[in-house]
Length: 190
Picture 1 (cartoon, rainbow, N blue to C red):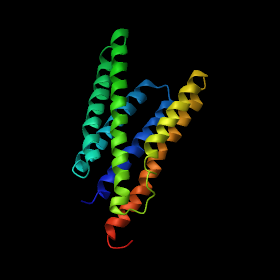
Picture 2: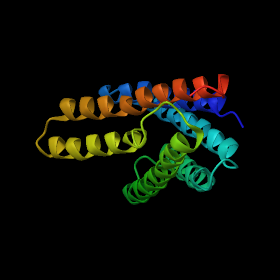
Picture 3: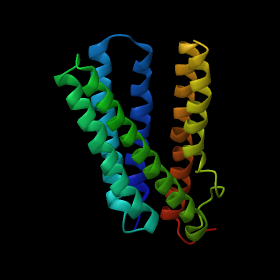
């Protein structure tokens, strides 16, 4: 099965999500709400890609339900937040829902990027093995560094570091896509 068309959709979803996260620099709540809904749609598109790729690898088949669970939890938290924004106990529960959705998303990313890495050698892509894993490592490192900067009160720098680290997967998936397209268009060349 040719996976390039699905990688293109994945790249669109990741690029859209990274661009939507630029709204974190704003304090305008309606803009943030729209950005969160569109970001959830990007997560849904990634779930669709994983559904289509789930027959290609055991790792992809594990990534799909984790991503679907993440979309459901984050979507539920986002919808419920609009109904009772003043109820502190409900907001704490919704924060836990969002956290669980983020953990499920992280697990899905792990399976997805390791599944893509698994294909590098087996399909003979002109892409370095294990480089695609940085799509998971870079945002995690960015979040870790940003958490310390947040404690120091450097909010703007914190957001910028996270945004830069979220563009790393966009660049790496673009490079991976080029290698996949080259292999799928010329399967007999090495």
